[in-house]
Picture 1: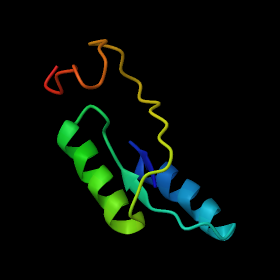
Picture 2: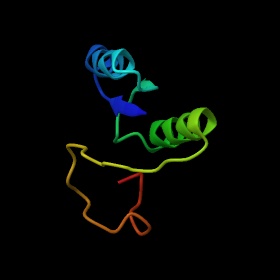
Picture 3: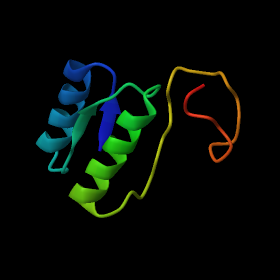
Length: 74
């Protein structure tokens, strides 16, 4: 699964993966929307059964906290 804010960019990336024979799920996503992130995780789990790797490369910095202590509303 790949997620990004811009649908066109993420669909293009998924198309390149599919062309290489890799199953891909492209999801437009605003990483600052906690509910949207939870839905994306659920879609990935429903489709693939597990998540093997995760790269969190979102463009937000504040508040800085370990994920288990972060307040999604902030």
